[in-house]
Length: 133
Image (cartoon, rainbow, N blue to C red; front, side, top):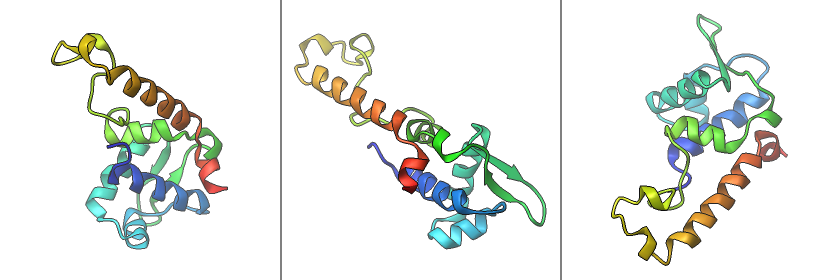
């Protein structure tokens, strides 16, 4: 599936954080977006680990955007929270990696591969700034 709950929650969190003037803690975000706190915490940590967010500890701690919205592309965001690039279909990214070793017989694979490439390009060009408009 292309857009999982993790990707959806990451994007929703980034939208809220892009409007924040100071760090927002995970509990506030969790309540505001109605997202389970433990699940959201993992998502925010992945975004911080990959340089999209800055994490601040302490009483006034929380998360804050480390990059400008125009510099945050959705392909990278989704890859960070999913642990892999988002995929439209559960198929190998190349004929050489086909688990059944029958990619050369598959008439659907070339179409799906082209579709995936177009979606990857779209997501790589789509930024948080575009979503905020």
